Length: 206
Image (cartoon, rainbow, N blue to C red; front, side, top):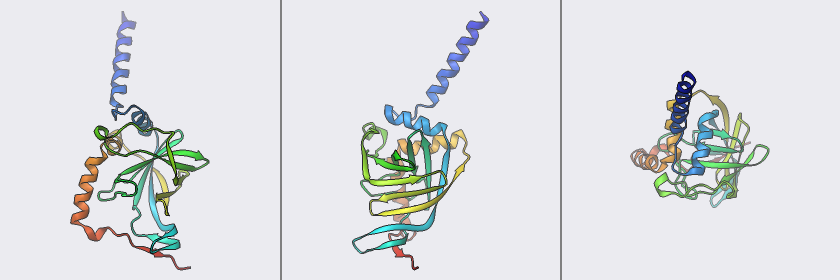
């Protein structure tokens, strides 16, 4: 009888834990997010330098990218990473408005962008990790991040692992799931504070 009670308690506890980790209605995305939730999170800070291959009137060479994200949070699980810019007002409009990107390991510390429409759960199909866009690449080794949010410029970041509570992790992962809600708030903030955002790119003098 006692063993039966313990078994019921164990099953109930396990059921609650599994339920707590259902972040997305999309099965593949939910598996990725559960992995992100359980593993380390890294905060990467822009190093005030980027590599530009030149585009239209923008210079070629080592530059300071005025539109680079100040901070990027990196989530890692197996051969996948997620890059998330959680600061209000910071969004990418390259290949669609978004607050995050998902990447699949190519080799070593190099990752390629996973193709997705990057919409909220009710507007998006599930992700397919086999579908990648090798025009966009990032390099991540837990201490540094080199990321091409735009196809023609790569921004450099220094990274460190951060400690976060279960509550904080869930709030961050909610941006992956319901990013459209956050994007709307970002646009409102950008409209009210246009001077805080710039696309200026300056060549770094030798």
